[in-house]
Length: 407
Ligand SMILES: *Cc1c(COP(=O)(O)O)cnc(C)c1O
Image 1 (cartoon, rainbow, N blue to C red):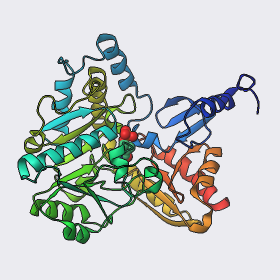
Image 2 (image 1 turned 120 degrees about the vertical axis):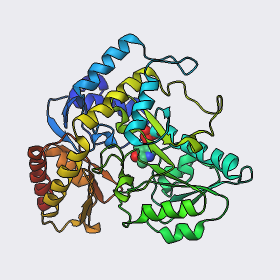
Image 3 (image 1 turned 135 degrees about the horizontal axis):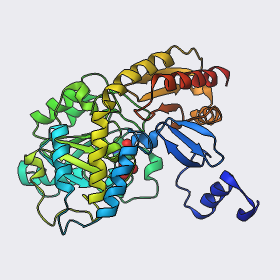
Image 4 (image 1 turned 45 degrees about the vertical axis):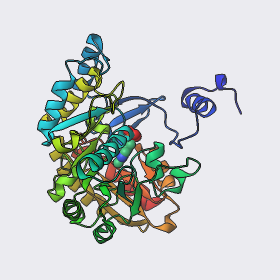
């Protein structure tokens, strides 16, 4: 192997990362040095369309000028106060987020996994202090194929062996049920169930869309059994599916909504849970927190990221352009394809088992200037920034069609 110093360009950065970084990812070998909107450029200056959008964290498009401006201005004023003191961004952030979403209150954190942990703590504490479940006996129902993050508690209730292996012992109090099966949830209900935790559409599992009416049934079942419905909208929320939240497709109001990723438009980690007074009221000073949670830099950027989403009509664009994109893709005839499904700008191209895996298609698409990431071994996920236009979609469809029909 060549010495790192002799390597140049992308090869050098890849080598440095491989040699000095932990190997907890298997990225495509593209080294991005610059980005704008739906486009990124590698170290050599080759341009690609970004079809992952950082797992939907850059719904607003890369390096949105309004977000950069706010980030810069806020960074020059004050970035971190901790919650030991107050700052002039957190209050307006909470007010604006509640008026956008219709919930009473916000609890800000940083990463998605932290917000999921926060929701678990809220649900458990509610179940002991409001519902009256005996101490330490609360159960939370979760689903096969779930992805809620990477902390030890969260991977403990994953159904993916790869996420769990070697990380036990795990936190008890979770039970896995088949995704999309409301009858199984009904049957699993008992008086010590605190909550049902669900992704409206399972992103990491391969953009798995449950049967219509599933969330509505979960809402009814949890209400009937005095349990909370906790919806993880970290990836599905903030416009990805053509609604602000994916649960709106079923017209329900959950008890807790978990958001992250696009909440800050890819600038900075900002996550939160949303809930009404009865649930959020379980938190008292001292029982939960985070040094960076609710910091003025993150809050200022998230305020602007929400405004950009609304003022640039990105949610409706996601619905319209997503339908257009899906129709164009479904018209591509390829015997590698098992199914193409999606909602908004969240589309899965599921390949046949004989297609030889999604990875080689993603590598071929990379050659064509399109960056996709396979999810599991047979699904190509299409999730561009919501700013993508019809011409860009046509450009992409041409290339996807070429790869699907020639590989
Ligand atoms: C990404 C994601 C998470 C975890 O978010 P992190 O910021 O990576 O911790 C949780 N739930 C869902 C549905 C996600 O897509």
